[in-house]
Amino acid sequence: MMAEASAARAEEYLADVARQVEARLDQALPAESEDPATLHASMRYSTLGGGKRLRAALVLASCRALGGPPEAALAVACAVEMIHAYSLIHDDLPCMDNGQLRRGKPTNHRVFGDAVATLAGDALLTLAFEELASIPLGLGVTAQTVVQVVAEISRAAGSRGMVGGQVADLQAEGRDIDLERLRAIHRRKTGALILACVRSGALLACAGAAALKMMDEYGRHLGLAYQIVDDILDETGDQAVVGKGTHTDLLRGKATYPRLVGLEESRRLAREAVLAAQNALEPLGEDARPLLDLAAYVARRDR
Image (cartoon, rainbow, N blue to C red):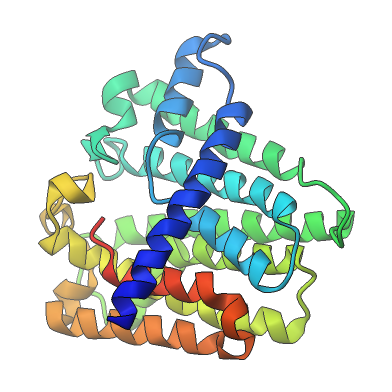
């Protein structure tokens, strides 16, 4: 019951974050009427009106847990949602995973074509750093802090993080790999940006070394849990609920946790990772409640 209550609170928190982030993204993204209209329509199609906004919530919640300014965190939250949207557009391209459904609607390339979808992803990644440049100074946030946040997110999104993880994931298709190799792939493909969200919120709150270490532990374990659950949902989820195609990992011969260790062990590993994430924040007490609830949500999510 406690886990259910925690997950329910997280749903409420995510809904509140989504309202804030959606409003700011709507302002930050170019209007569909602005030339080139098709490109801007494509960018808005994949960024607005969908998604859990988990990454944005992690930025805001980690900043809040350490007493940082929410105004600064909102700019970072929107930037990471742009980066996430770009990554999904590119992941779904025919040259990658050839996804047909995302967030309950046809993928970007099916609506706008491969070329425009590719360029929309490129434009969203670039716009994300324009958004980071708008982080307001003051309330403890300095120009040096902004540079630290930009560096954090750049590393997480690039070849040493998300993009490198995607390449490793593609190279592992149809091959037998061990669990440690799978963890290494997912640490970069999924975990790096999740960890950067948590660390960025902490940096905006002027976190010291001890607080950053706590956030590192939380973010790493949460990223692992998220990916394990994602792998499970591909095998057991309802496409109408998940909002994207299921059983695609198996068809493409992807390395996944259920494929390597089975469903039950995968579920156990996900629970273990969530608990480790929550335990890492024990010194923060109730200040960390949204982060603790978000971890519970990740364990129980169905989409």
